[in-house]
Length: 168
Image 1: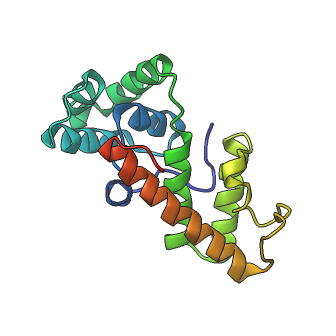
Image 2 (image 1 turned 135 degrees about the vertical axis):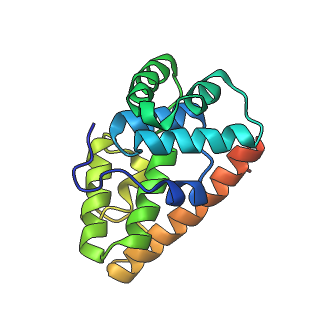
């Protein structure tokens, strides 16, 4: 999986939008969405905030000069996890596209995300060429509103996930 339209997301953007655990960091590194040096910095920040799981500690202890080791650790970590990291990365990618690109670039990024993540239903309503649901409004303004609403729900879900509570 390689995102040709997007590349890696800036660490500051990621940190301001989500708290990634080690498995999510590993997914970002292995897909090219997260630069290895940024993975180290995110893990260090997580470690400072008191997270001591083995993978976070392993990422945090790698020196930035040894960023190649991050890719190896990310591959090992990704191979051991059964949890799907795609939803949080979908949220980050859509947020980046909406907040930082023009409409056509935003559409291209979301379309690539949809394809690279194997056409998940939770992204379908954000893709400009997908058929609308029974109550969905047509037009660019309505599409942008659906994207903003989806992001608001994702932000709420991430805050809930961080606190360990379930959404109701």
